[in-house]
Figure 1 (cartoon, helix red, strand yellow):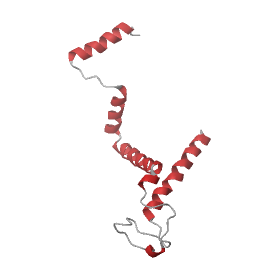
Figure 2 (spheres, helix red, strand yellow):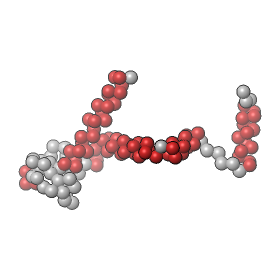
Figure 3 (cartoon, one colour):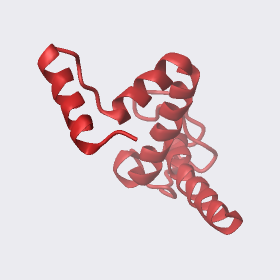
Figure 4 (cartoon, helix red, strand yellow):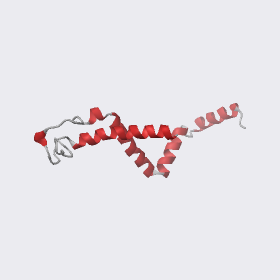
Length: 114
């Protein structure tokens, strides 16, 4: 077992010799990115969906149930990126609001199962 004095001495030696000192978190992160790039991609997708679910009220261009019968069955456009449904509701807004219960249910399920 290394004494505390030797451990501190070792850190100081690395600092004075010019070796880079990285945090343990950074080392683990860099190793994961190099070894599992698809895992990073998956984590990015999940994080994006989570942020979208949390900020759905701010991100969504229209309300969840906001209807406009004059805008029924519209194709994709600058006003409605994914178009509208039979009641004139914006499909992008409905998809964004649909993320909220998905993440809420999965969190509850994880708590109950663990």
